[in-house]
Length: 76
Image 1 (cartoon, one colour):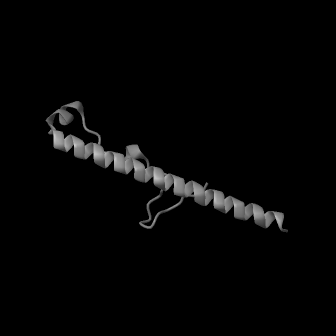
Image 2: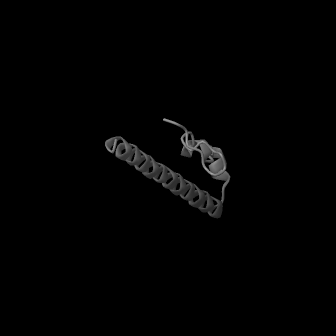
Image 3: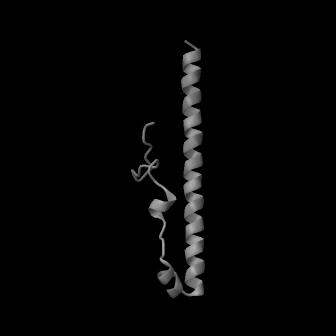
């Protein structure tokens, strides 16, 4: 499968949540205040939702591309 790049030239197939998430150790987490913990959770949830959205858009594009190819082949 060919790699798909976004507007910024980022390879969307290699983008993963683990690749962009900020992961704290237990010691680092213990140093955060309640508002910092909430901000962290909010940002990570938004990041996850954005990645899911990108994946769904990419899947829709793949389905559309496959449909176009099938249509062309069937009309030969």
